[in-house]
Length: 139
Image (cartoon, rainbow, N blue to C red):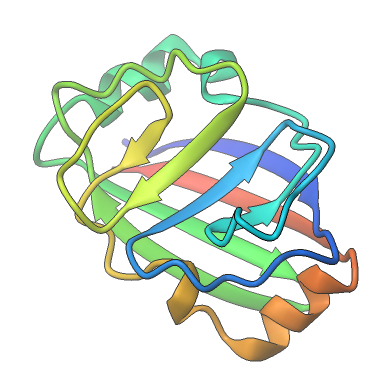
């Protein structure tokens, strides 16, 4: 059975999506040019807000986790996997990783894409302050 969580955020003029191994949404209300993996700020939720059943399902190394990110009628889907070490305890930001590194911000590991892989049209819409919705699904 799949479980879902939704996060809404907004882009920012400093969204560059240049990072080659991660993508991130944050509840912070600012972004510096150094935040090259951040796709959206002012997220309405953090990993600490996700349901216990969603978190538990993600703690399976065989779980498929999909992030569907929609901006300005354009969509990108990034797929990774779960890990028994995922905690979803961070109350500020969520990070998808192409590596197997896990910390309290990690929402998936071994992702098949990172910020740098996202279509330029989506990045441009985010840099213009566009609204972003991310659906996280675990199966």
